Image (tube, rainbow, N blue to C red; front, side):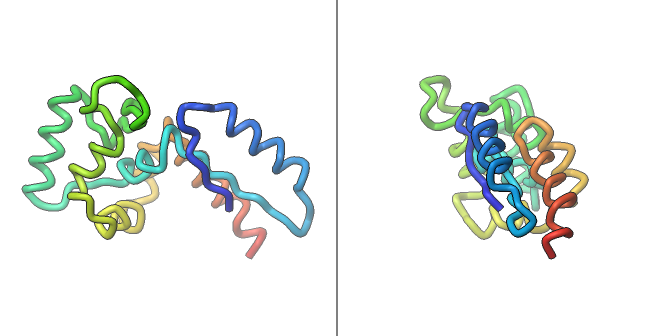
Length: 140
């Protein structure tokens, strides 16, 4: 499994696919995961508010952004962007998870795959999950 942030450079995926094609043998199966723009988008795709405090934080962020950052995390920006800091993907994730890595893990460990597939259609998550379903069983 090779997982990489695209950082708003979709050409990185093409380069990884070319490398996979060259190295693809019966003994090596490469599963690509390319988070667009960053892995934080995938965590947000799996965020489901747990309790009133998280619901309030999510609602406040969604109101400020005019969209739900969990359903449309692809609309957020990478930290290197000079645009509005309230759209910074890392800042939004830190606010929602209280900068708690265990809370981040909960997002991808417990959220239903159907929700991840639906929300991840613009972040590369859906494509990654499909590769895992299609290719991993052949390896195991």
